[in-house]
Image (cartoon, rainbow, N blue to C red):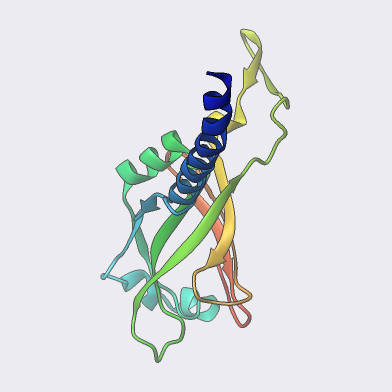
Length: 165
């Protein structure tokens, strides 16, 4: 019986290794995708003369609040965010995918305390904000840093030639 078990161990080890490789590969390629933004076709705000002085290649975006709340609650470790984008004024408008990884601004044991009429109350930043950094898929030397809360989005996208806020 012992000899039989010893003969089976290499087969079980190979099966276990194969299962682990398949699981890791499937997990690593399974980034959730989000479409929080859509282009606001009524770009009348961009015709403002004061704004035209400081904004070049602007696109006004609408935010899907339910998708934003979904992202804030799920807080995936990695994701793909699709956004409307125009690389140059001459190019047609389309979309780009941002490949993003979550990062924590504070260490896990950090505490933020606010003083209220009821005394000190601890605020958990992770409940308020989720932050990501990454790149634009297919564009070398690009950088993305973006943070989401339940009702706001703040970020920057940088390529070799341009910076977008």
